[in-house]
Length: 107
Image 1: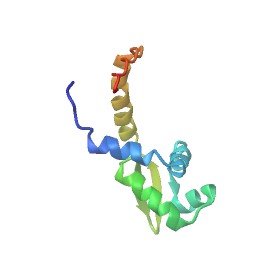
Image 2 (image 1 turned 135 degrees about the vertical axis):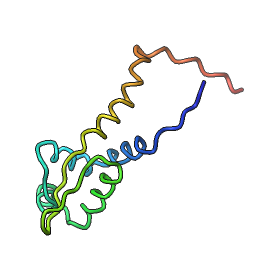
Image 3 (image 1 turned 45 degrees about the vertical axis):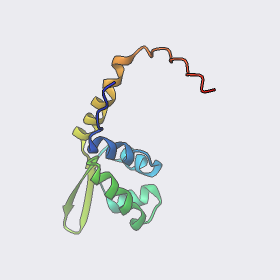
Image 4 (image 1 turned 120 degrees about the vertical axis):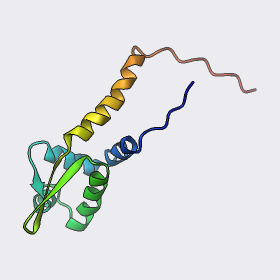
């Protein structure tokens, strides 16, 4: 079996999606872009807590930030979601799932 290394952007994307608060942010941004103050209000969290999560989402390239005056607006970066979806789609070729191989007796 040939091992391939997972591209860093894929690993960062899945890591960013592993937190419930970050998923809530993504869900809110599905409709339209929002500023930090609106996100804080909808999520009921402080700006400092949210900033950490937004940084993680930005590093994973799942969200984009746009500054307008003193406010920063966030929106989804849909091409990165498409990249994650394409990565997962590669596993469809294994469907239907093959039966598991029997474990080797370790006694």
